[in-house]
Structures are given as structure tokens and as C-alpha cells.
Length: 339
Ligand SMILES: NC(=O)c1ccc[n+]([C@@H]2O[C@H](COP(=O)([O-])OP(=O)(O)OC[C@H]3O[C@@H](n4cnc5c(N)ncnc54)[C@H](O)[C@@H]3O)[C@@H](O)[C@H]2O)c1
Ligand SMILES: O[C@H]1[C@H](O)[C@@H](O)[C@H](O)[C@@H](O)[C@H]1O
Image (tube, rainbow, N blue to C red; front, side):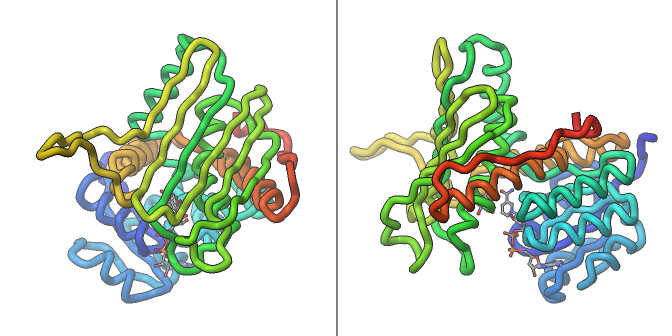
């Protein structure tokens, strides 16, 4: 049944993304309010809730899910904490927007799928927000129109200025390239069947021991080949670019020419410095779409199946990165529940 009042959301994890989502829900999104926040760091939770009337503050995610006025959950804790939070949300039958990755590995993602299926109805949207980016959405419409013919190859570049402390070589795949895994599956409508990872001599910008950059190759069940340059300590900016090569033409996004300046012997634009800046509109649209669907009693957007399928590709990618050569992706059969 459609809901009338604003949707009361509990936000779990109020670090960089969680605090930004709290701000978004409070200031940007229509039809929602932040009813509770939880972070294991009490000070962070308190800071995020500051100035939001009626928002209760917790260190225990389950207490936040049970708090007054909570009707839905946004999970923005680190990936390894997602499974416990998802299962707790299911126990209270609450709709969830879960930041990527759904969980860090395929076995835990499968446990989440099974728990959602036991509920008997879908509850999860995964935060693959690039699907809500205007440029990616235009590229998808163009490919779906068939005008350029069949996609043959997809080239991607994914560059971050620098990595936070504790960022590992495996995380280049499971935290960063996971976005290209989702985008590949969504743009092409195909599953990824094998992953190969090539690592050049690491950049001098990369922290000691980090294999950065990497070149990651996907093969798909529709016969396409996809490459991803992942380069997370490039130093100069945040860039996400994609070019699809089709039978009758190519299409490219992410050149970032929103503002071009010509002045005193120079010409050029600016490079975004992080994902919050580059994908601000996509995060806003993702949140509005989740709130609107939830208030209608529906679940739309990337599903737990998408979270599982990308977790399985991540696992193959991490094995390929550690000297495994070309690694096949193993997926369980897709249940009808997720078709
Ligand atoms: N979609 C995107 O572009 C994007 C961008 C950045 C991060 N993310 C995702 O968002 C999530 C959070 O990333 P972040 O960069 O904000 O990390 P962060 O480290 O800045 O914040 C995580 C917060 O969660 C808290 N926390 C840790 N364990 C917890 C638990 N069990 N329960 C409640 N809180 C807990 C930490 O104290 C911290 O405040 C991750 O899943 C990450 O992959 C997505
Ligand atoms: O967690 C972040 C986030 O998902 C960004 O969108 C991505 O560009 C980064 O590489 C990753 O570390």
C-alpha cells in the first residue's frame, strides 16, 4: 500500500558515505526523513544526527532499526559489516538500500540471497549508483536502441586521486572495479564469465606493497570483451570513463567537459577530485528512486542478485590478480525470484 507520510530511515554507518547520505536524506530527498543513525563510533553518529529533529543516535545497528519511526534502512558501514546488518533488516522485514558491495565475497552474498528468498519478497536495492548517472543512462538507452548494432568491446578507465589507509590490492577489484562489473552486466545485459588481471610495475604514487594500477579484463556470455584500467593513486583527479565499441559505431562518456574555460593563453576544464563530486547527481537520483519505490511498496534498481553476481566476479578477479591467470566465474543458477 502506498505510504503518505515521509519514510523514516535508519542510517547504519555514518562515515564518509553514510554522513553524506544523512545530509542528502535530510536536505535533498523528498518524502523521507532520518529517523535514526548508528555507528560503532558514537561521536560520528552524534555528529551526523546533529540538527536533525527526532533522529535518535545509536552505536548498535539493531537498536537503530528498532527505534521509533524507522520504516527502512540504509546500510553504509564497511562491506564486511553488511551481511549482519542485512540479516537484521530482514528479521524486521525492513526495505534496505545497501551500499556496494552487497557483501565482500560470493558465499556471504549467497547467504543474503537465500535469506531474502525465505522472506518471500524482495527487500534489497544495492547502491550501484552509476546506473542513475545521466551519462551512463544515455549510453544504456543508445545501446538498447540498437542504432549502433551489437556491442563488441567496452573500454573503461577508473582513476582515484589516492587511497585511504588500509586499502589493499584486492580492494582495487572488490571495492573499485566492482562498479565496472555492475556497469558491464547492466549496459550489455550479459553475465561476466571470466576475469584476467595484469599488473604493471606499481606506480611510485602507490603506498608500499599496493599493486596499483591494474588492467582487468572480462569476457562475457554474449561474447563481448571488456577492459578496465584501475588506477587509484593517480594523484590528479577522479575520472570514470567508458567507451563502447559496437558493430556500427562507438559511444563514449565521462570526458567531463561540463565547463571549459578559455583565458589568457590557456584552454581547458577541471577534473573532479572525488566520487562525491563526480557522482553527486547520481547519488541524489538513486536515493530519490529508492525512497519513491519504497513508499509505493516496491523494490526497484540493482537487486541482491546483482550484488551476488558481482561478488562472484570479484572473487574470480582477486584470484586472477594473485597469479591465477584467466579465472572462470562460477555463478549459481539465477532463481526465478530474481528474474
Ligand atoms: N557508491 C559509491 O560510490 C561509494 C563510495 C564510497 C563508499 N562506498 C561504500 O559505502 C560504504 C561505507 O564506505 P565509507 O567510505 O563511508 O567508509 P567509512 O570508513 O568512511 O565509514 C564507515 C563507517 O561505518 C562505521 N562502522 C564500522 N563498522 C560498523 C558496524 N558494524 N555498524 C555500524 N557502523 C559501523 C565506521 O565507524 C565508520 O564511521 C562501503 O560499503 C563502501 O564500499 C560507496
Ligand atoms: O569505495 C569507493 C567508491 O565506490 C568509488 O565510487 C570508487 O570510485 C572508488 O574506487 C572506491 O574505492
